[in-house]
Each structure stands twice: as C-alpha cells, then as structure tokens.
Image (tube, rainbow, N blue to C red; front, side, top):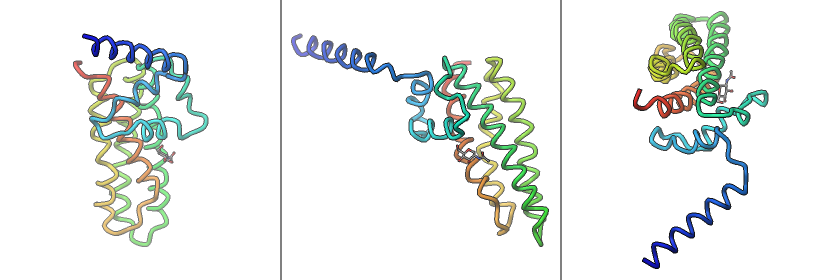
Length: 174
Ligand SMILES: *[C@@H]1O[C@H](CO)[C@@H](O)[C@H](O)[C@H]1NC(C)=O
C-alpha cells in the first residue's frame, strides 16, 4: 500500500516535470511510440524535421503529423525520381536505372494520392501505399543491376520507413 502510493506520487511528480517542460509537441507524441516499427524517436524527428522549412514542431495534433509525414514522403519520392531520371539519362548502360525510374514514377504518383488522402484523415489505402513504398529503395538497388543508384534512394528509404510507421500507428483499428 505504502509502496503503491509512493509510486503514484512519483508518477505525478514525473508528469508535473514533463508538463512544466512544455516541450512536448504532437510530433514528440507520435514519434515516441513507433518502437514497434523499429523507428526511434530520433530517427522519426530527424526525417520529419530534416527540411528546415518543414513545419514539424507546429503540427497541432496527430492527424497533422500524419498528413505532414505523407506529404514529405511524396515530395521525397519525387526528388528521388528526378535524381534517378538524371542518372539514367547520363548512364552508358541505362537499362537498370530506367527500371528503377519506373518504380519511383509509380511510387511518386501513388504517394501523391496518399498525401491527399492522409490530409483528409483517410488512412486506409494511404497506409498501404506507404507500406509498399518502403520496398522501392531495395527494389531499385536490385533492378539497377550494379549501376550506381543516386544517394537519394537511401534518403527515401529512411523517409518511407518513418512515414509508414506514422500512418500505421495512427490508423490502427481502422
Ligand atoms: C528524403 O528524406 C531523407 C530523410 O529525412 C533525407 O535524408 C533526404 O535528404 C531526403 N531527400 C530529398 C531529396 O529531399
């Protein structure tokens, strides 16, 4: 009994300290529970706040964080697609990079749709698009067949993993 009330007081004290900090944002809240997807809070915040222009800390609730994650994933895929297109255009043996480009072209279009869907609060479908997008970087490395895939491929890997985890964690039970 005494131990229990001590625990309770400690919990309240901890809650008071956290509350007093005032630093907890919707981003911290969402990024803090992605361990089941092997995404650390740091990796999550780093992906969503990577661009200094990203309004990551201003996201007012979980839905806004999900919309931001999907939007950033779409923009990131589009940038990666453009890099792969440029690499394919200047490659001596472009067949592998062209196959990679097809993966990104499809993913970028699907992610644009997913970003609109997530912004409207509709996660089913968007979540699956993000899930599939996670396989694009490894797929590109495979189909490129030894050609040098641009570094943006690795960047998109990080972004897709985080964005999928954010949407999946929010849409549980839908
Ligand atoms: C995509 O996102 C990742 C993770 O934040 C970042 O490292 C990378 O630079 C981004 N790529 C582009 C082209 O913006």
